[in-house]
Structures are given as structure tokens and as C-alpha cells.
Length: 401
Image (tube, rainbow, N blue to C red):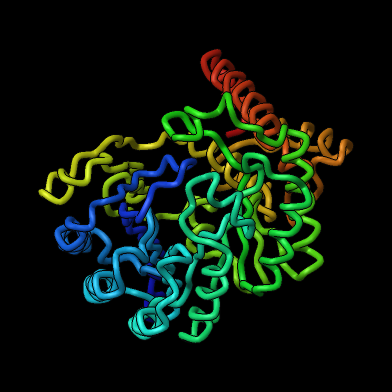
């Protein structure tokens, strides 16, 4: 009798492209403008890094590749294809791998370039649109306009892409509910397979942060109404909500992003890129010149203890429409579900949660207060863990694990 062949574990790759034509006023990701002269050297450094890490992934099957930024499309299609060719040569890439390119509308209007990318293996585009209101776009430093969005979408379709996403932001300075509803209508009319809706966050160190005292921002209640409006409008248009901020036509949820929320393995490349690979979570320093020179300094690196993994499972699973699974909690993470269930029943009574397959999930209104809910659940887990340890210290080994 032949032994069963053990399937290769899945792995996602993230390639960080830290170049932008201009830095947006709200962005705190590691990206640089006016650094085009370093693009060739950086491409070579990424190829070298990918090759160096590939032996560690020899027994993995790469099923998603994500080119994020920055503005990956700004790197140019020839360099992007070089990078993808390196992945194709050095890794076990699934035939049906999801390969995503982030792009800004102003750098995604060239049909010839997009066609070359699709033929090379890219099969998904994530377009950073944010708003269909030109005045709002200009107010936060976006350099594209609505006309360029329409041109980019036409070029993406003409190049043969059948899967593309649009990113939107609500809660922009001076944005009204009417303007947000118009952006949703304009986006739905473009018929993307996937839509992401993110609430604006004013991050320290960004231009918006330094101007925050002079900004007129929608308050928390207004932002909440914008969010609920998006949930309702997108559902009416056939987009299923599968995560707090993400909506997709059936079969088009982002497989790469789901890796993060399902705590699957991913390896990041480039300055500022994060990884959770081989039981270790690590990130590379946000230093382009050092990375190009081959000095791959880590800004963090740690093995994650079991209790922290359990906590992460609660935090991440409750971001998704799948929700928290009782069996996975108890059998994979060895955590009693009882202290969580009593709280989840209370949330259900208030319309913030609901039963799901083998567990519980948050409702859209629950997503709005998910930080508070998750904090209370983690406190309950902490009390349960403390009681377990106390019983163990007393020699009461009847406690369940």
C-alpha cells in the first residue's frame, strides 16, 4: 500500500514596490517619490532576495502573489515582468495562482503594457480610486481624476483582465453622505469584481495629520452611516461582504488578503514588507538604500507563543463574514469556547453578532464596534487562561486544555 502523498502547504508572496509618482497626504506606508533612478537597482535587489529565500519555500506551493506599494504600476511593466519571471523560475507556483498588481489610474491606462502584464501571468488588478469626486481627490493629494479612472478601467478590460478591484475611502475631509453615495454609484457602474471600502484614518507623521486642526472631517456617526450605506448598496448590487472592508462578486474574494485573516503563511520582500513564515513573524527595515545594498535588516522578528496565536485568531476571524469557528478554536488553538460564547450571545441580543456555521460572526453594525467587542473577548480569554494556570499550579489537573 502506497503512503499518501502529503500536500504541499500553501504560501503567499508579497512584493513591496516603494515607488510613487507623488505621496498621498494620508499615506503612512513606506513609499518614496522622485526615486525613479533607483528602480533598476531595486528590481535587481528584489530578484536577488527572492532567489535567496526560495530554498526555504522548496516544499511550499505558492498560490498567491501580491505586488503592493507604493504604486507597483509605476515601476513599469518590463521590471514587473522580470520580478514575476523570477517567482515563476524559483518557486512552485500553482497553475491557478492569484497574481495581483496594485495600480493607480494615472499609471494604468496603457493597454499595451497591461496586455504584456496579463500575458506574463498577472491576472488581477487592484485599482486605487478612493473617490469619484475630483475635488476630494485633489484635497488629499491624489494625482489622478475621474476621467483617468474610466480610461484605466477600459484599458484593463481591453487587455483581457477578468478580475479587477477598486479601492475607495470614506470619511474624507469635507466629504458628504451624498458625495459618498455618488462615488458608490459611479464605482458600481464600472462593474469591478471586487470593491474595498476603507474609513479614513489620520496617521501620525502624514501631511493630513499636521493639518488635522484645520480639517472638517465627518464625525464617527457620519462615518458609520457611510459604512452602512456601502454595505447596503453593494449587497443590492451583488457584492458579498466577506470581510469588514471588502466586498466581492461570488468567487472573486481576494485570496491573498484572506491569507492574512485566516492566519496562513506569507513571505514578504522589500523594505517595510512583513512576513509570517516558518512560525516566525518578521519585517524588513524601511530603508530602500540599505535594501538595495543587500543589507536585509529586520525591524522586528519573533516567534509567536500559543496564547498570542489564539488571540490573533479571535481578532482576525471576527473581521471576516465566516466569523469564529468553535471547532477550530477548541481543537486547533486549545481554547475553551465557553467564556466567549456567553459574550457573543449578549452581542447577538443587541444586533451586533449572529450565529454562523459552527460558530459566530459579527453583523455590519458589530463590525463598527469590533475593536470593543474583540477587546472584551480577549479579556475573557485572559481570565480563562489565568484560572487554568492557577488550577494547574494547585495541582488540579482535571482542568481542560
